[in-house]
Length: 311
Image (cartoon, rainbow, N blue to C red; front, side, top):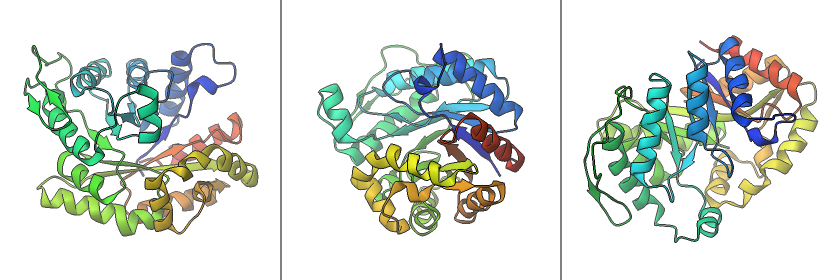
């Protein structure tokens, strides 16, 4: 089982004096326990790519990346520069997770009009991929214009940077299958994965002549004796996602009403069985999220199980 962790808000860590130090500590612990990767959400404070770079530089084996960076309103040249710098810093262990973000959050936050999402995703990836490869290729589209004013290659970043997209809807999956290396899902259960996400993404990749896509599934999982408490905390923390139409559609595919119904919580056998359901549904990789909901002791207990399950 290829398994990693996605760290939730590092600013909220009790007693953390420095967010980067805390991230490095957790990355080191993940590596010691045998996990494959550490992902960092892009929230309103720290820069997820910069934190991933610092962790990957300090921790010599583990793969790192943001899950995910909203592409709006970042210009592809700026994102490519940050990603290539991270690739050089981590000696080839950086992977880039991007997403469209939510219009009702990003538009008022930045005061800029949110572009047509699927057109923007297609054009953004078309402009971004050559830049990540160090090419000086320009691009002109309806939502993206990119013409580098100088060389874009970064010494040390020659190894290809994998790009995964937070895509779950049919149109986004089609673009992702054609132009990216896979998807990283959030709050998508095994039924939604098996019946909708995996078939659509795989078909798009095959039709485009691309390799089989990576299907990285974010699973809310905690090994704990306090499963009811974990579910109650998750219900409160995840309520926001129940207001987003794209997530509502994925919940309907799964047959659930609340995001917290997707939480996998219980003893080691319960959580291991829950994770295997995702693999059986077509996931190629799993990343665990909100593992700290029952406290530090149960977070470490969860990570130990993940390390035991890792290939």
